[in-house]
Image 1 (spheres, rainbow, N blue to C red):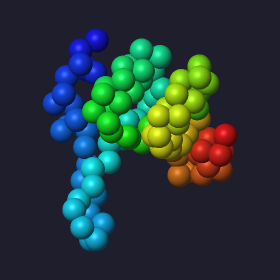
Image 2: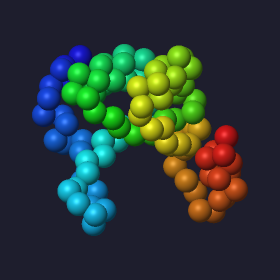
Image 3: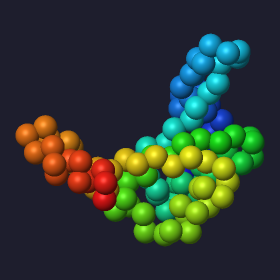
Image 4: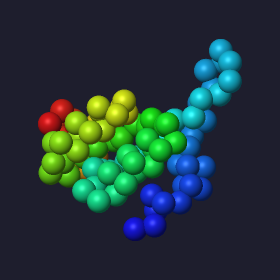
Length: 102
């Protein structure tokens, strides 16, 4: 696994946010996790650089609640990326909304 060992991934993953009150901020986001191997490696790399990020987790991919606790204990934010990551269907919005709530 070379992804988390490379520093240049920070530049590719960063999205600048302009708040209008000073210098721009950088928000790192990681989607579709957690992954039992890659997420801990990313957390280690973020800690080594003193950075925080937002992790958008898919509910049915959470196999180890301790990993989710590790994410939050390190000061990262968690976002909801639905439970099953199904493609939303406007024809059945109730099902799509239920996946988000679940």
